Length: 447
Image (cartoon, rainbow, N blue to C red):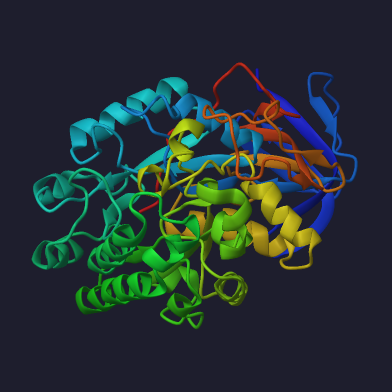
């Protein structure tokens, strides 16, 4: 017997418009969308949305869920719970775990973990190194989201710093190559300068000086130059400077772009003025930079030069984060609060609801060829969220779901909340309560 759920009286945000209507879910699929849907069967579960908004579930194209090997910080199970509570129904996880995801064998081991524990839909990036081209060539492009290369700021042996190897990789794959761009030589020189002056206890305000605009632009521009030379499909992760936005275009539809860009929540929200109060809790790589950079990133997001909003969710324990500068790791937890942070920016008049959905739902699906997700369409998987835009709540330790137990938004009151999250047609989350059944599935790609 088919399971049916009818969502009534909603404001539906999808494909550039907002319209009032109903959505009928049958098993894992959106069966119907109409201005008014009536059902006769008593077996249909009816949820009155009461004029609140239904959005497609967000697709986060960059997270670090720390499993395997770093599970004192997070696990796929704990962070996928936080993600669905925040309206993210699908995630793409990075390869710098322990062991690293740089062989097909290790990739499949991660898929097995996720199949048993993930509350959200999942895929993984395959990691490139200076010496694993043979493994890269084994990867089935229909089975994984893409290839991740660290051109700056990585652990272990994942920094790809051999120019010949880099060019060979760019020439050898037609997968989306996602890159972290910071020039290590520039950063190393800056760090040595300030260590000589301060030792390990460098003022956190110098983080964006050490990991500078110059370091970011130099690396990003080189990656783009190489992509143009080789014809590679390049996606530049987490832009942090206004200067970098000049490297990208809005004159080509996303489906036809060969070079694309992402911005993360923290680079749209914080600036270097916040280091005084937030300290190492907002230490990220690339660094949060100036308010001018933040404004320029938002402008590029709105005009189409930047294509995707993501989180770079990268939790560490508070004990780790509270260390002095050189010992405090970069990264922070964001998946649970990303969508509501963007909704707060909507309330501030900075971005429309339609644009949020475009950048967090539609565009990641287009960019990575995600099959039948990212939109509210008949026949698509029913990954949906209900958002009440007038239901304030404050982030505190009692409602934070990350395993690390803290958030850079702690103490912040958001006007909006995600009341319901549906993953593959199942109610997976309701008002901070996570349902018992894990509804997440492996993402598939239409390539």
